[in-house]
Image (cartoon, rainbow, N blue to C red; front, top):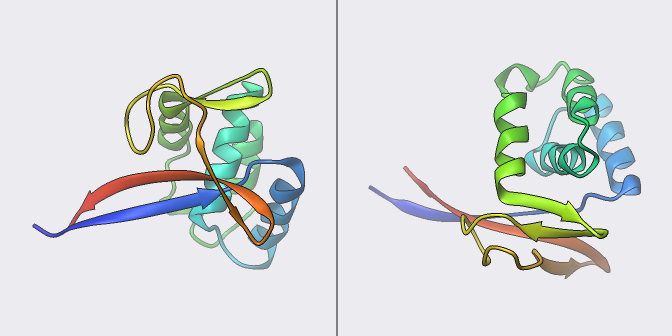
Length: 118
């Protein structure tokens, strides 16, 4: 088996969410866009923004399991006091610590690392 590390970066603020919605209308879903919406759903305790984003596209949405993605973000993260914290030791970071942030082109991105097996 061949193991490969994947690093996924995304922001989850209002402006980035709006840009993601525009990209969905112009093209298709990208994983970072869906992760942003799932995280926002966890933070707001409202799954509608995730559903709206996925349902807003016709390209690629049939391959996305909304319930699984929301549940996965809920397992990994907790939003309190205006900050995102790790809920589990899965991926990068320790339980209870703030998430890792990487600044790219002047914008903060949440950093997640996982190992996939092919």
